[in-house]
Image (cartoon, rainbow, N blue to C red):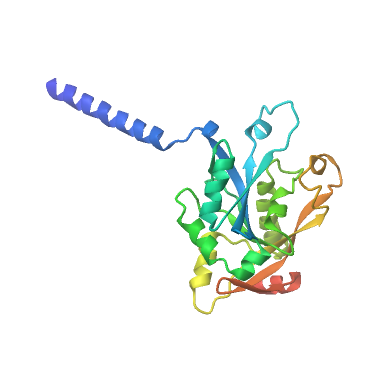
Length: 249
C-alpha cells in the first residue's frame, strides 16, 4: 500500500512538471504580434524591415463589426536585420513573433548586394520554422509587395503563398523555394540558386487600401514575374516565363 502511495505521488509530481514545462514555452496571443510575412529592403542605415502583422480582431471567425484591414504594416531600420527586428518590437505594443511566417521577400537591390547576411539571421533565429517561401521583388521594393491586400484571402501572405504554389504546379512558371533549400544551393559547388520574382500590377498606392478588398477589379494585384538567378548569394540575372519552364522541367 505504501509503495502504491509513493508511486502515485511520483506520477503526480511528473505530471505537474510536464504541465508546467508546457505552460512555460507557451506564449499568450495577447502578448504577441504575429507576423505573416516580412520584407527586407536596402536603407541608408543598412536594412529596412517591413512586417505584415495579423490583426486578430479582423481575421477571427467572429470578427469586429468595425471594418478594418486584416493586417497592419510595421517598419524599422537597423545596421543588421536583427537590429531592425529589435527596433520593430519597440514600435509595437507586442513582441513581433516570426514562427508563423509564410513569405520572406527581398528587394532586387538587396538580392544584388547579396543574401548571405539576411539569410544567416533567418537561419539562426530559434523562433523561425523553415516552411516559409522566399521571393524577390522585381523592379519594386519589398515593402510595397507586402502592402498589397487580397480579396480572396484575408491574410495577404496566404494569398502570396498560394500564388507561388499554384503557379508552379499549374504552369511551371515559378519556383517554390524555402530557406533550407536556398542555403543548400548557395553553399553547393556548381549550383546556381533561383528564386521567384514578384511584381505589382496596377496602383502601388492603392494596394494597401480597403478598396483593394472591396472592388471587383482590384486596383493592385501581385504577379509572378520571372525567376531570379543567383551566383553564390548574389542576383546576376532573370529568366522569363518560358526560360523558367525549361529550367523547372
